[in-house]
Picture 1 (cartoon, helix red, strand yellow):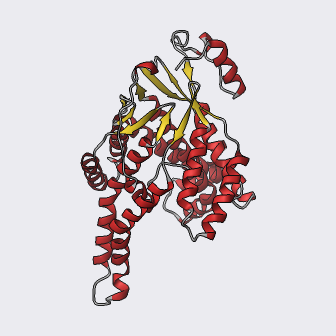
Picture 2: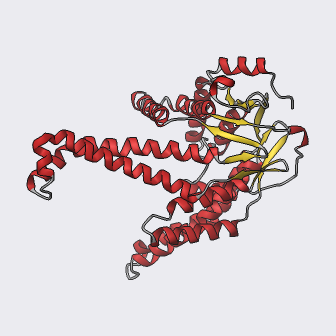
Picture 3: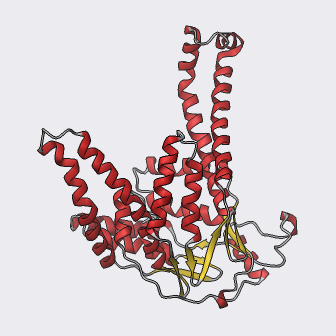
Length: 383
């Protein structure tokens, strides 16, 4: 695979609104290696057509066509995405998804439904017993679903003629999941950033493109700082808004907390405070985590970089929300396209890629985990 010339790269970036790299942007390595941006070429109206056909046939076949519909969406999204002059491809089939769903239904769906309905059938059995068993069963299957889904999706995705693969084992991820869940519970959530980082590291470090692995160097303490900053951000906004709303007289009342006057000020400010404390810090948390995780991910000697800001993500999400509300959901295809374009606009990979030395290794994967992930809503796809 040939790398782009500077002129080709700059013309493509200018066409898609991607900032050009050069000495002025403070990157000293930009003259040594090209900065590769993924590009999504698809259009919302094309995805809308697929969405309409999928919806019609899914309703007509009582849901059976949904497997074919998901494959069509994935094929479209993959084929319309390019990286370094090469298109992605999705090789999964509807028959695989249907077979995987059937296995997942027998292994998890039926037992879970039986446990959920047990209190309605046998009144003498305490409700908490089947509920506890169902919850434990779900927790045990989540690692299987995550690993299986990740393995299947990557094994069916290729860039050019070389496929991705996932080589992690369920047993290892289950240990991370169980230990992380227990420690998060025992520490009242303080351990969660370390748990999240361990999961991310496992998934990235066991992902391969051909015979070359990806690497991840993030730490739990790094994510913890982001969570603490988000929490502090929430508290500052709350205190500031209450103080502004209260005024000088209200501030004197605040000093007398928990007086009745303080409670009145608090409840009068609750609505706007709640909105801002939920939205602004949440957007900061989401984009800061993405930025941290991408910026600590590498492929060989090439480094990922994610440049989105809190305002960028907030603008995207709020606009998407308005589009969906005003069109009663009809704008869903355009929202998906906007999400992909946002990600690819702010994401790049800089450094030597050397695709010629990457070799394909034949690995296969079952779609059962993919369908288990569907039960838990733990999938990784847009389709």
